Length: 118
Image (cartoon, rainbow, N blue to C red):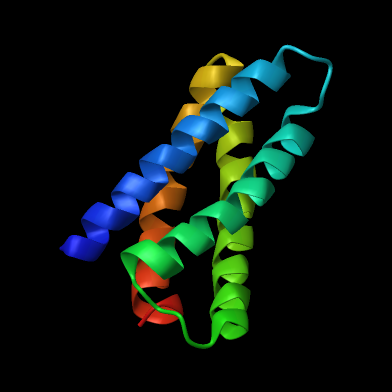
C-alpha cells in the first residue's frame, strides 16, 4: 500500500507538471501528438528516478530497471496518444489530455510494481 501511495504522489506531481507544460505549449502551433510525446518522454526520466530512489528504494540494476521502465512508459505513451485521439473527438484539447492519462496510470503502476521494481 505504501508503494501505491508513493507512486500516486509521484504520479500526481509528474501529472501536474505534464498538464501544466502541455497546456502552456498547446497554445502554440505544435502538433498535439508531438507535444504529448515530448512532454511525456521528458517526464519518464523524472518519474523513474523518483520512483527508484524514493518510492521503491531500488538502487541496484539501474540500467536494467530503466530499460523496463522505458518499455512500460513507451507502451503507456502509445496508449496515451491513442486515448488522446479518441478523446479529442469529444472534448477540448486539455480535457482530452487529462482523460487520456487514466488508462495509462493503472497499467503503468501494475507493471512497474510487479516487474520493474519487484
